[in-house]
Image (cartoon, rainbow, N blue to C red):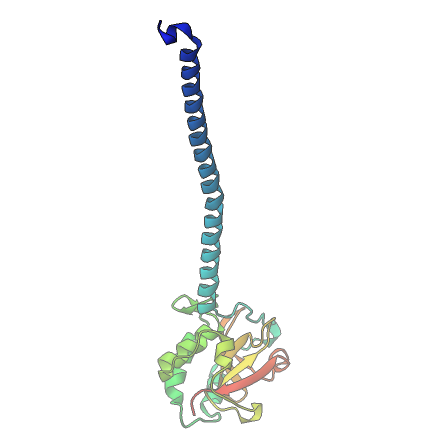
Amino acid sequence: MDKNASHPQNGWLSDLNLGLNFVKILYIIILSFFLLTISSGCSAPTQIVKKAETADTLKVELKEDVQSDEDDEEIPEAEIIEPSEEIESRILISEDNPSIDRHKLLSEIMPLMRSPYRKNGIGNKGFDCSGFTMKVFQDGLGYELPRSSKAQFSIGQPVDRDSLKFGDLVFFKTRRSIPSHVGVYVGDGLFAHASLKIGVTISLLDSKYYKKRYVGARRIIE
């Protein structure tokens, strides 16, 4: 007699076992795929965050590289003096620095009078204070200054206020940072600078506003 015929349940039990094994294998595949998807999903935000952090870091580094004078002064109207022939004559007979070509430097400074103030500006469309000093030193003396007033304050030789000579850089604390403003001493108690309010101009060191904010001077060329 046929054994399978005597035990018909063996056939469907075998089929059932095969079916269960297939279901188990399918379950394992689906579970593995699900776990892999979750893992990938969790890592993506981390990568995005890292990319964002990298971008922010680059922005900070770039900002530091082109750091200018965001804390420039807000000069009161009463402290503004208008450039005039009298002012220019005072400059021409002021304390001299034999190492600096006075006429060459003045030929760069005077045409820039009334150029507009422009944040981060270093040329055609305007200047901030350190952009102005960079421009006149580069074009007038062939000397390349650092970009910010803080960096300019860190070079050259310190000079006492009563020993200032034409071409010295003078520095002020006009906002939070020290120093936050810079100009070029042009003699007779006057300095040329890019003012936040009126652009490139000439001001008095002994004016009330600047006298109390003066922090020092540097002689770049001796």
